[in-house]
Length: 262
Length: 262
Image (cartoon, rainbow over all chains, first blue to last red; front, side):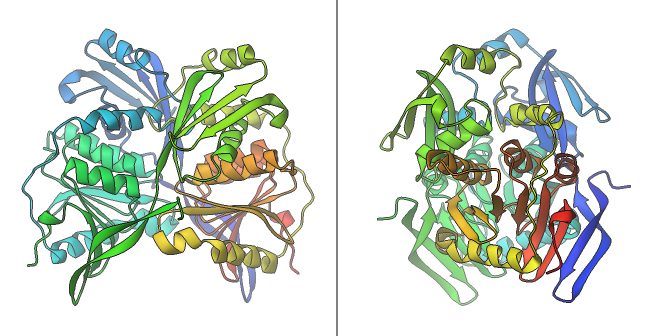
């Protein structure tokens, strides 16, 4: 049984008539992260790789630097919970509840302000060069692997890879979750992040750009659109952004110097 | 000038070659909501209808019930800020900081737990009936109006309407923002919400379902997929959910009794 989807009865209507049949719908499960015995956040996600999601989320939020900061991590799949113990919980608590009101709802606040901090950091100078053919091939590979999308139409797919091909692949109902799961998998498997390319089916919003830039990823490849803010940040932070990759066609929005002719 | 998008120089690559040209990219602007002089949340949004976004967001989060709870609301477009004064700020503060750790990051926590509360409420019984032809027409109308999507490919479109047609329409980089802007516009214009249909280009996640159900919207129409959780909640809360609307084809996931043959 694939825990990531569920078969349910639906009413299918076409120009010719209607019938009740079974269809595959993607699962959406709450995962509540308890950090040093305090309830921290509830994410709605595709129920797989919750350990990677937890690691990646904590890393993206700047709450851990790597695996060495995590003393224990236990996922309770049945109840949608994960318990994490980190080193120096006191410092963490200060970081979390000190500086700024933590936001609610769609809660983009904390991430956005971290952006401004990152702007003062030096830009990414990693010398990776790739040509349009490589980019097309990586996007094709992403789409070929997207089996949950093919059956449910309800998820985003993302991958981390090199010019040679995809290293880690992931599908999730949330664009952010998908990227966090990949980051978490790199941390767990002790694979370097800063020489990887991020390939995604989703849009390149400023938050995705920043999530990637914060861990040093130099290239983002997407089937979809960027925003004016993400392009601006991409230029400032030295990130190459390629969007609307469809076969041999694509738009380069920032960091063109990494895209070669051949 | 259209503040919602920006012209930037991009490198366009096709099978035939490459050229630098100007392209339209969607704007993504931070809007920080100050609630009774306290910084509350920063949303990343398409810079228009920020007043509606603020009203709708506060209503969706259960922080106001209607326009009468808002004493003043001033948008500072230049600086991406809005100041809101509400009645009984003391009570609000208790609600915000009392019960539960407010979540950070992708911050789905608060909304999700409100779900469980809403489940105890009675389900939506509004007797609205509509046929597939009406549904197709409303979706076509939504797509016809989506001019920002047509030029930038970077936004979701949503609308509130009746069987007769679309009443309020909105495009935003965020699915949630788009719905909140519509809710806010209804509140500001003193238009009833509970007899409206929600038509959207985006997926029907549990959060969108709940946002709509909390204000009594009985029907959700989408071009995209639902999730297993949203279908489950749709059934419990009495919401009719139709997805994958493409011309005359569509899938009815919950509340079939509102969909008539003719």
